[in-house]
Length: 221
Image: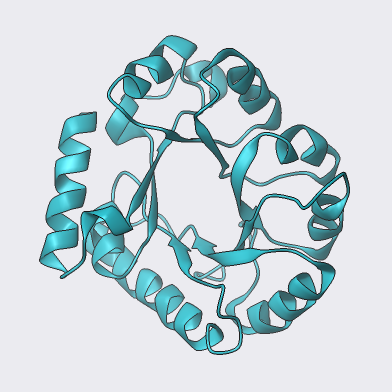
């Protein structure tokens, strides 16, 4: 696949589900990619890029155009917050109180976040269980965090359609929580193998790496 094909398929999936393609933010996940790789996609007009390692993101941000909107999409250690907080537009992986407290430290208001939900209840994955999200949202907002929505990484699907039930459950959870938390508008879900299903189920942000950039550089795997 290529960047142009990904964007065409985003448009088709949005149209198919009665949505405007403009409602969907495509985060080009550039982890392990070189500055040249990112610049190539940037020159096509793309501005949203995602990283999952604090040091790698900081180095890239320092050497790439300042109008890039950086998204941190991986698990974040509390002791790495300082290097991420001043760079990102959105943190996708807010998953615990210790991270929330660390995110609030520093001058000014921190960037907005998404609460990560472990929709598949997989013990090896980070994220809040669906049943504890409501209480944790109230606590995080009380701390002063701007929580804009939910993020999930479902179990690896054998077929893209396998992800649908997880995407749907995240959307239904967001819709239920939004009654008490009106700022909860975003749904970050869907990657290279299943982003079209995610769009059909209501994703407002998709995280696409391999389908845009090709195979990862092995140094970052």
